[in-house]
Image (spheres, helix red, strand yellow):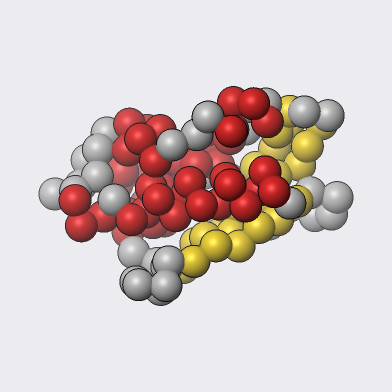
Length: 116
């Protein structure tokens, strides 16, 4: 059902936590399933120097949060603006249809981050 890469991110997530101020932290949630994703980014000018996440949710949402924090690190605001849920789906070697909400939650977090 889940890819090996997704299970690896779930079992050993990368970049877990909340970065201290002056990092920007946003929180988004899926009102249908109740999953919550918190994303923190420390900016260095236009560059996301460091990222961290915390997730309360299903296996796919936890893995997606890990993949998102990994992907965000080192990206510019312009690169983040081009983010789509497909980025996470590819990073996790696919998501089952019933788990695609996890990638959408990541896209919501990136949008919120860019507005913060």
